[in-house]
Length: 326
Image (cartoon, rainbow, N blue to C red; front, top):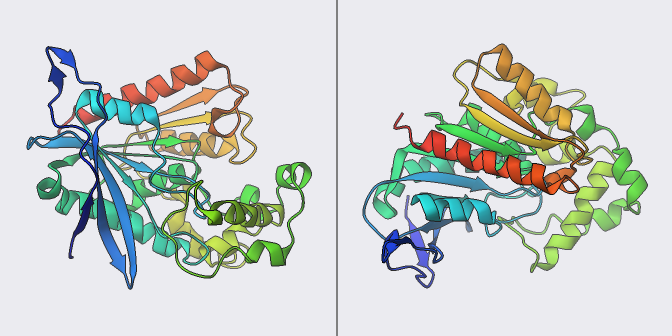
């Protein structure tokens, strides 16, 4: 596969320490095309320090209901962790629904990790044996999916308010929260925002972001997300969705995972992570579910000390796992 690299201004030239103190300058960022499908380039941002030593990799997968979002949105605490510990952070894009379906998105996920393992050692000195994958919301779902799709399995996973199925009542029935708290979106207005071209990411600066957000709201208000995003009818083609529901594919070989979820999440119900925890326990897979009482999606509204504690636990978990060689 031909590799195309666009290198941003290098923000860091020195190593880990300056005058005996930890270097607090930002990591350098390089943008790579890790995959092309026709004329669509799918990209990853690689954040790292200069140096030729092989380093562990933390992969970040953005959220956005598989419909919006971009690799440019990386949690600051994860960037700081990678800066402080001399890890490489790779933030990936993927093709967005509904212009492509879940099958293609899953393929982009697998190809991104394969690219890190095969090209990463030479291109940016990645250690292919030390990879942890993390993501939030839909990115948390893709993180869980990586546990069954990516081979060899990553060292560990961190799912922030993710979900282990795509065909539960929460996604295939009209969502009360979205119907009662937002204006009802009409079909014509909803679909006006999509279908024009395949996108690999949107952020707050893109005009598509707001319109595609309305499209997502329409899907939730009408219980259509699963059918539109996957291309399968959850009522008549449930077996075709099985391969995309991590909770139904847990084995003893599933990677260790830490999950974080708020109990008052109105977008992705807390029970989705609880269901994963029960299934992981049944198969004796190492796992943690960090529960934040009264927190909503993204831990909004949770007590600051509990939110901070949950995030610190995730960072510690990543450190623990990336110390291991196997």
